[in-house]
Length: 148
Image (tube, rainbow, N blue to C red; front, side, top):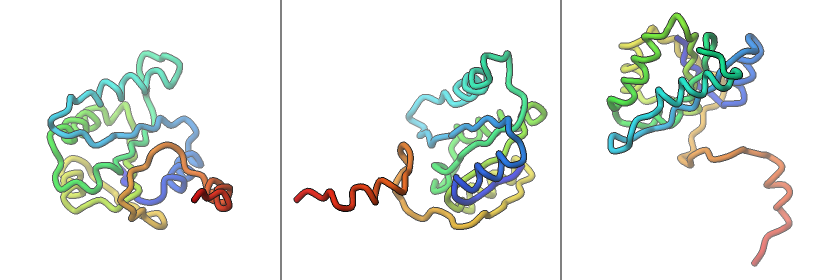
């Protein structure tokens, strides 16, 4: 399994360049006090993103950026990774992260999978969460529209 680290746009362009039929999934951080539904959500989205096929078989890109700063991998992370390991024949998984993964997360992944870590360009260092879309033109448009 590959772990690609770098800007999302570069990773997405690289994956889509090689293969067009790709299912993208964002695996958010889930604390132990919350209910874990990510395996069900993964199965539902993979089926319905391909026009209601009975099951999806193919390339899967899983974004684990929210997990890259965590001090430890909780049992929810392990359960999801074990699910992926059990379905390795069905899914050709590529893990992605915009931030460099901490050593504990990387070592945990290496105990479960044969990980090939590939760094692509500049990694994200800001601590702000990624919400919605990003646009370079928004800052340019609002440059002169500052209210005082």
